[in-house]
Amino acid sequence: MARYTDPVCRLCRREGSKLYLKGDRCYTPKCAVDRRAYAPGQHGQGRKKVSEYGLQLREKQKARRMYGILEVQFRRYFDRAERQPGVTGENLLRLLERRLDNVIYRLGLGASRNEARQLVRHGHFIVNGRKVNIPSFLVRVGDVITVRDKSQESPRVKELLDRATDHTPPAWLEYEADQAKAQVVALPERDQIDAPIQEHLIVEMYSR
Image (cartoon, rainbow, N blue to C red):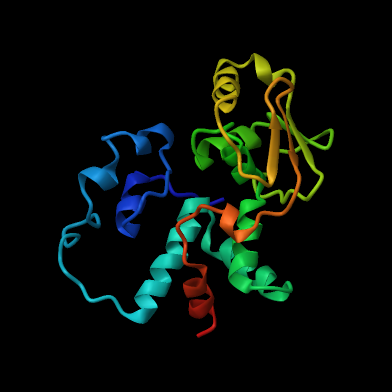
């Protein structure tokens, strides 16, 4: 499977906002967006007039890069969101939020979505009693997510579990720190998704 292997801070600078791809570093003065608030490359500081399509494209790229999704997969999410009843843009964000790697990140069990994705791939989590190692697995209301007993012996997982006790997950998730167990209590509403994305621009781009 293709994946991005270049410095991820370039992605944040290209989109002009923090995508929180480096975990804790994004909250420090070392953050590349704070230090160099312009696009990377030789012409990054040049003034360019952005077209309407350019704005739409940047918003789509921002969402795709924030959730770590390839182009074809992102389009599939959009097509699925379009078929569902309701507002297409909100449906799209709701699908992205329900990905297992994003849920682990939202619970504070991963410093970044990249780390959460790696932890899922390594089989550290159980959903409804079964080990799931697919980051794109979509959780549903009522799903129970736990950390494998054997995984809790890992130094990094222990550290993340300690961090999660001070982390407040979104309202659609409940987390019991003493049991390292979480439950999906509702589908995420738009006001519960803090992603700085203008989803209507993505809808407009795909509707051209």
